[in-house]
Figure 1 (cartoon, one colour):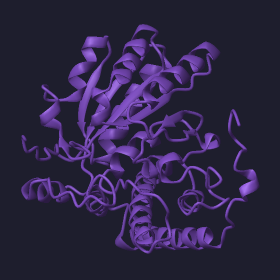
Figure 2 (cartoon, helix red, strand yellow; figure 1 turned 180 degrees about the vertical axis):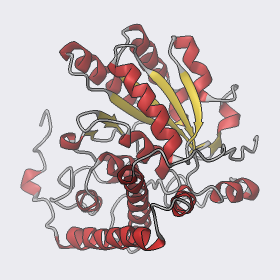
Figure 3 (spheres, rainbow, N blue to C red; figure 1 turned 120 degrees about the vertical axis):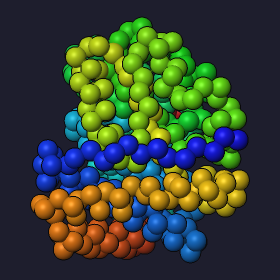
Length: 334
């Protein structure tokens, strides 16, 4: 195993960005963090059936990417998709209710953690099979191109997906047909417990992009500004008919693969190094250095989100279970 520590670039100035955008970046990252920590608490209390894959630590990649998209653009999300869905605009109430298995959930309580989504906000319900969403994202992008709608698709995936055959096929097809899709890898260095360096003979996943004739870039994924800028550029390229881009965001999940994984396979020095690059306190500190923000302003945002997440839990707890008579609805065959 090759220990890979974060290499954050010098912080880019935020003075050129509007206050509303910067506030929204912080709001969405903080919302994801509080949601994931609350989900963990509710899972440990036995209120959430099944299992959960949390994304705390990876907030900047999801938020920076989704804020660079238009409202009518789509994303495909992963088994670790709560944060990605929230970043695109799916409500915390509807996701929490889904995790509780309630009828008010975004998928009527039928999907649970692994299958959240809502087409009305541009979130294709998650496909938990690793790599399976990439060909689907290419197919959606093909439809958008045929319709000349100027919509694009951002396909979120993890580093493990980049060793799947269907992922390679999706990139090849997207490049050949110049499809409006962004392949966005959240490389958190581990596919379950397997370190990136054990299964990739290259330094970066984005190094594979030239083989398909598309641009590829590896960026520091714990800075929402960096992610926002690169995805905005990739989106412009896709919308103008120039085809796909592979964007690799280097980030880190702060917990194990899922709730029964203590992640003892990770070297302490690696964990410590990445925890120091926690995107939320680091971005908060940057905002406070800008005279347009104050500690009171940011605390107000945090208190607003704290109330929202508490209300999401109450909503989920008080929502009804789905009637068994509706079990066969929303399926193609019985």
